Length: 363
Ligand code: PEP
Ligand code: MN
Image (cartoon, rainbow, N blue to C red):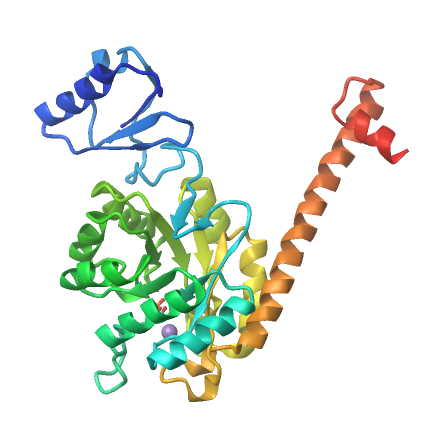
């Protein structure tokens, strides 16, 4: 169950709720609710007297398997990565190569993606490759390249962590920990990143349902780390024409279920460079909080995923068009609101309507 307590609730209320959960052996986890108060998630039910304590605003019985990730828990989350807000009004653009190839290359691509509009730099140092004979990433040297690129550009950096034992090392170098598609259900890894305070980018397993995806986010949040950003990166479908198929249904659908920000990765989601720009636009139009894009100065010679990688010039175009698209969509929504107000005025013959000052301005 979820218990929301007001910001001016006596501290004894919080203590009593947590003690009641402990006494019953129930997992309890508190987080800010985005309105100044706090929400306590309890994996079970407490007696009614706990719900009647001073400052308890609201209780919601558990009706979904995930509770901390649920939209019932709190206002929409904004996750800060360095000074970049994910889930606010402006979309985030994470960009960089699939794999980090050298310190110099990473610094150079960081400068290029920054001037093309990116605000977070990506790059894999530990790579999950389908073949054990493929390039596996530079490891520690890759992490050092990310640090150098951040120093050169000021961009915060995101990179994948594959094993629980690597989490501290990666968290010392990166601003955001990426959990890759293949590790979405690696529960020891999820628990381990859940015990850090570092923001986590959780990519959807390519054969995972929406609920399994949200349950993996719940694993991280149950450990106390509520800074989770989801990423739709394509699922495996039947058509061999595509490496993966971007499942854009989950963008509006997860926004109905969860307060967590969600971004789209059209690079892995299509597996084809020529499809990336269109599907990036589609992702933003579907309501994504941003994009993750694989970008390389010379995609044909990238050490991994070159076929789905775009150039910094293409990134610049996607960035410009993406912002223009969102602006246009906002404009449509405002016009639609205005039109429905006009209809209301006409029907009611009433001057008592929000649209009147705006209508007078237009007239
Ligand atoms: C990546 O971002 O380079 C990556 C390996 O992604 P995914 O885990 O989605 O395949
Ligand atoms: Mn890749």
